[in-house]
Length: 150
Image (tube, rainbow, N blue to C red; front, side):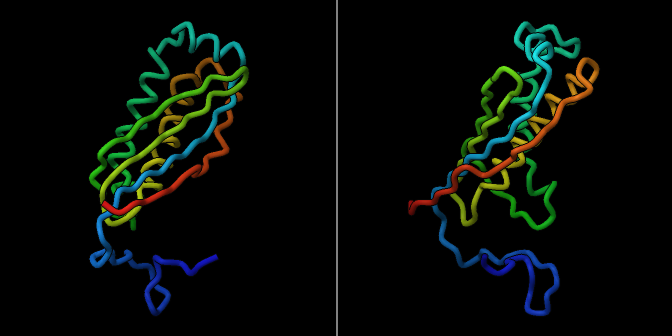
């Protein structure tokens, strides 16, 4: 493990100074899942959830959340995203959210990808909570982080 980067010389919280870092092409991919009842997944697939199209709404929510990451995470730098995508894999008892964030910037986009996944899953939970009281969100993880010179 490395050192904590959000601490200054006195051990106090500080934003990382990225002013001397070069801009690079950055990509991050994150995923997470929500376990649901089989009946709930069927209702989602057949668009029978009263609040509307669950996966479309969750996709939009994830994209919007990624764009607001620095507003949600106190020491996170604002990043000009060049792309954010949120996709879903539907399994028998779960839905997996996969988000990819891209930017050309001086710092990474993993927080944006993780935020997109988290909020997309929370949106599914919110839209389905009236019909499924046993949903569980979990396994939120960073799958890939890369940078290349531009």
